[in-house]
Image (cartoon, rainbow, N blue to C red; front, side, top):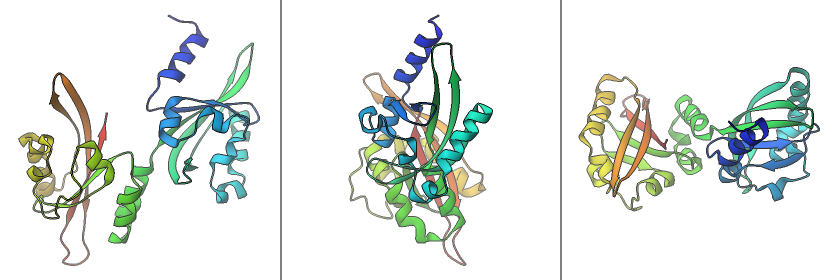
Length: 245
């Protein structure tokens, strides 16, 4: 087994879904890993020698949220938060993170682990409000594919991440059937039966499906369903969130 330093370096450099940032005890960014760059756009060169407060929205900076988090990390050894992180392209993204105080004989630092929960947060807001959020929801979610179906299992809307994930042309018409999407994954009888069951029973789905793309290339998708209840006599809809796992 590698020593502790080597072990951490391997975790830091090889992680793909766990964004990590190393800071000094004062909150000055020293480095970020590739997962951080993939999720939020910044490289180490972009952030080196800057205080991590630059990643917070103005409202959180004004209330000194970064400093409060830093103080708690010093006092208790760790702190967790859920707030916006400003992407390099200036888009605010909902994240959850934990800052961990690390002290050794040679050095002291703070390691922050960050997870993008923007899709889940937007879905929560969507489900708690009216359909007015639908447009902004589908535009803003980039990490997960979204597919909205009516009660007859016909397409209402998809987002860009969904179309990219499944190689779908942009002109799939509203009212199209699943098999018209243009990707064989959506013709799988097992998947279609699961969706039917959700619509009929109202029991939500959270399940993984393996898709054989051919040439020994397989991908695993996690699909989570949310029932959308319409106002009055409005038709109920089913929202599917798809992530590659």
